[in-house]
Length: 500
Image (cartoon, rainbow, N blue to C red; front, side):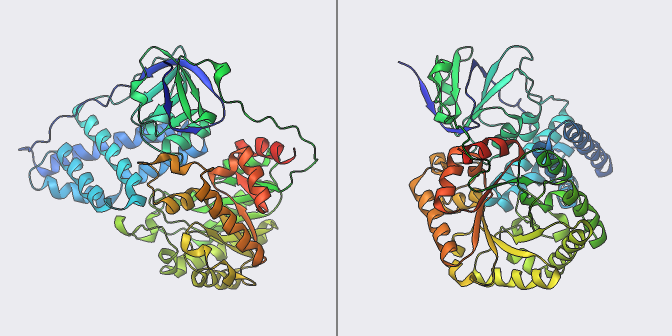
């Protein structure tokens, strides 16, 4: 009987290759106490952290935009002063450098426990802890994958560092954990590597056997042929322009340059916080004007939508001064730090004036009409913008009618919307099938948003991952969404579908 393993597909290209099971991480030494002076162990720990930081920075230098941004955020987590201070407290109790850093990571992870939105950051922290402990023990954690041949690699999951180092021999990835918005999925998608995540039975695939990885079919088939793969819908363009606008999602100057080489009709999502993940201090208005102007000038012609700082757990903005547990995903974080938000909006206006671009601004994680109107007032006091908000919180959907005449546009962040709708954790999904964009409840929720926006006479777009699926982009157009915004690499495929 043909063995079929189900999961969530990432990408559109099917592959057939040999199964390669990646060995589990080597066992690290047990934690122990030491008779060394605190100063000695502290210096040893500093050197180990610096070595791991150097490894990550080397990877950042050879990674693309999405991978580099994730790795950059991990470096900031690694060198966090509060984490090191917690480790020093354990050093003073007589624990070794490795034990102290491990215990400090556990302490911080415990603070994050019980909050699904924080779980991914907790997992990142534990991976960093293992890497520091491995350096101290002289253990190499690099995954051992043959550099020649073609393989579909199978594991519980892969860290961002692992995924960014995959050799060219890796043509597919299958993980028992993770979800469509996990780090593994994001990096595989950016690198063009098809994947199947949340495939709980993946370990049943025999090493060395041939497997068909069929992301469009959300499955892996042992012994399957490429001819068995789910066919991708072929689109034949019949129009000169797409039936709705296709814009680009960007997070850096390099992304803007890449987007400008596509047919994107502007920028539908500029993740502004990604420019400042390294900053312990708030960037000055002048430096922000300089940075934004550079990105504005390089981006494709058309509306440029700036999402204000998004203080979520996987994008740590140190200058907001949040404790780990307080890094919650809602607008109140920025509202309570109003001057930082006002400074950013003033900087965006300065860059708009400097470049002459048509700039729109929107706030993330708005939970109510009251919050939306608060942001709109501040934005209009700060510059000459069209003003919008993101629809990611379920509580905002029922209040869209209250935004009529006050908000110019809405943008649906489908990743967070789906996770909130089904109360899911993006990294550790117990029911990964619920993040299928074709799920009836999710489609009904999108329909509800589109209809509410139409009644309120507010334009509405989608900037989440689902918009990058050409077939789903066509459905969004039919539901009444006025535009979609996707990664630069997906603009052409989505545009072709919307011209057919």
